[in-house]
Length: 327
Image (spheres, rainbow, N blue to C red):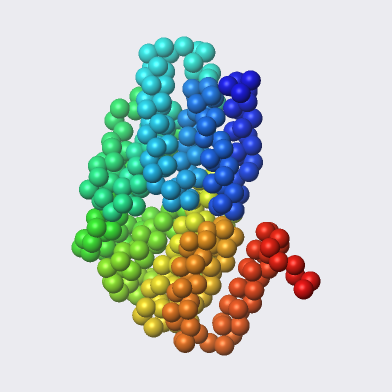
């Protein structure tokens, strides 16, 4: 029974249940489940690969993201072709099991691969993937749900073409990007945190003064960093990591410019979120940044920081049972 489809379905359910705030646990769950994916039926594999890709994306494991995305695209293209060749009632009933329209798995794979290229600073290739998911003339369906997703991908592509130019150092498009953000009145919190993160990463990478932009979006930044709750694997895990990363980038920006009160506020926020996510790499980066500017921290913030570090240590002791706290 090790190769049965039923076992694979059970493992998929266990995987989705186990995914939570702890990124170390998420990695273990993804690693265990990955070997079962191809034992699922061909349709269910698409959502499984999407979910795995999103978990690996939240972990910034870009090679694994690329691997899952390419598998998903290849399988989705086959299923999409079969759908329009067979047009059988049975096949259409099977497709209803998907959480998205069939074409989305093809285009989302391109979006994921664009993100992989951005992580490698290969912005030219990222643009090529972006142009791929912007061009959806091949999509045959015209129902309301399909049109909704087509509009979303075109919206994302419009923004990401500018973003790739921006991250590559083309500051001429910064104002275009800001105006695009300001004009997007129906933008979700998920989109907004990504947009602001792109601006802050650009500002820190190229030492660009963006004080006027931060003032313009001050209310939104403050409300976003309340870290709302989300309800699927992408928004539960990719987006919280981006919120934590935005806090770090804001802290880095303000501290390097001597705006210490804002810098330490965002740094403590980022540390708390990375502790919840159990992301040791970025938690340590936050500590290093704090220590670099320790001389500029006010006593109240320093006391809160030390109290937080003590709590982190106690949590770690309780989790690992390394030290008897009674001694």
